[in-house]
Every structure is written in structure tokens, then in C-alpha cells.
Amino acid sequence: MGNCFTSSKQSMTEIAPCDFIKSAQAFQLYGDPISSFTLYLHLALLYKTRALQFTPTDDPIPVVQFGPETVSGSREMMVRFIDEKLPQPPLMVAVEEGGETAVLVVKMVALQHRSVVWHLERMVRWSEDLVTRGGRRNGDPTMGSARMEARKFGKSYSQLLEVMVEHAQMEERVVFPLLETAERGLCKAANEEHGRDLPVMNGIREDIKSIGVLDTGSHDYREALRNLSTRLKSLLKRSKEHFQEEERDLLPLMEALELGKDQQLRVLEQCIDVMQGTHSHLFSFFVEGLLPREAMQYLDLIISCKEEKLVASMLRRIIE
Image (cartoon, rainbow, N blue to C red; front, side, top):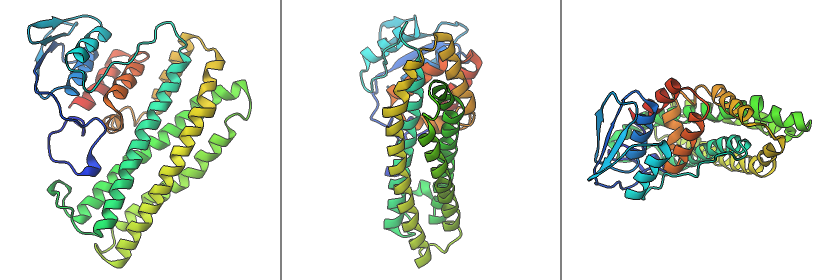
């Protein structure tokens, strides 16, 4: 599983927003191990406790036990029970029933922004640490040699780049065309910013590849690290500004489209389908950039529009 649930020693650049000191109080979970309902509760409990005991059963309705208390019921009721027993970190998000479902699309986009920004900030901190050390090892044996750490850095950025590209494609293919049906040219500036940033993002990937073949600790190596750190900081700044503009100027306009519930659920499904990598092999990486409450909220959005088998597969990627 990702950084949220490991107990091994981590570099400061590796700590996810869901890392915290977990309770030692024990929970018992009983349920079907391939059911998305059971897996959803399994994830919720992993955010809460180091002492989770899971017992597989054939019962389609999972059961959670805390001391003498046993609860079984709706997903919302059981998460509320878990939150009441162990309040930190909070997981509950207000469930929208009968409200404007357009808000769901806005939430999905905004949560993706949160994850991307966290991962970019992490890459910036990591690059600054590399510059400070100038090719020396950081003392963390899990990172290996300087060249091994550079490869880890490159892999992490490649994963982030794939998420960012898919996010932009989702907006260009699904979200922006919807807004353009209401007013032509509404998303022109946002599309132009996507086109402007893509070469920068790809350029950073090439910079990382170049650093990987330079002599560790050489003048050229240190200079390349400084340039890389500067470019990452610039990308972070531009991405934050771009996301803030979208959330302030574009996303609120989704409510004005007045799409029905079924239409909005289809839009959510289209958004997920466009971002195939993010919602398959990169899903654990993506969720690392979200707070526990945000991660559960994102899963609620997916559950609202995707079939059981796909949801269960995505949850297993995080848990395993």
C-alpha cells in the first residue's frame, strides 16, 4: 500500500497528507473480501487504527465491531460509527441527496487539483533537498545511492506527469465541451494554458533523465539539480494559479447548465473513463495526495457512477 498505511521509516519528502499517528485501539471487520462495501470500510479503518483485524466471510453486508459494540448497515452509518469511536482523522463528508448533481463534477475536478498540488509540492521539497545535498546520500537506506534516489525521483515525477496529462485531457474532452455548449469561447484561456504547460512538463521529465546520466556530485550535476528545482517551482506556481482560476471562474458555471441527475452521473463516468491510468495503476499514487476525508469523498463519487467490480478493483489497489 501507499504512504498512508506503511510503518517503515520515511524521508520527509515521502510523507503523505494522510500520514499520522494511528490509534492502537482494535477494530474488527467481517465481510466479503471481494465486495466493494467491505473494501471501502477496510480502507476507512486503515486510516484510523494500527490494530485492525479482518475476518473474511460470505456475508454481503459487512460488520464492524469495536469492543462490545457491533454495527451493520449503510455505508454512511458505518463510517459515522467509525468516526464517533475514533474521531481522528475525520472521514465523514456530508452526503448530498436530491441536491444539484453538477456539484459532484466540480468536486471531482477540485479533488484532483488537491492531489496534483500536493504531489508537486512534494517534488519541489525533494528537489530542494537534492540541491542542498549536491549528490550526497541523505542517510535514509530506503532511498539507496544518489543514482538510485534519482531514479526514484524520476519515477515519481513520471507518475505525476501522467496524472496531470490525464486531468487536462479530462477537462478538454468532457468538462470544457459542456461549458462551451452554453457559451462558445468560455474555456479558450484554460485550453491555451494547457497547451502552454505541456511542453514545460515534458521538459522537466527530460531534465530528470539528463541528471540521471551525469556524474554524481559534479559541477554539471549540481547545476542541473538547481535548474530542475527552479523549473519545478515555476510549474507549481503556474499550476496553482491555473487551478485557482478554474475553481473561481469556470467550475461554478457548471451549476448553470442545469443538467439532470442521470446526465451528471454520465459526466462523472466519462471523467473517470478518460483518466484510465489515474484510476487503475496510478490510483494508489493519486490517493496519497489526498487527506483521508478527501480520499473517501473521491471514492464516494466513483461509487455513485461505476459498477461494483471496478470499484472493488480500485480499492484493492490502495489496500494491497
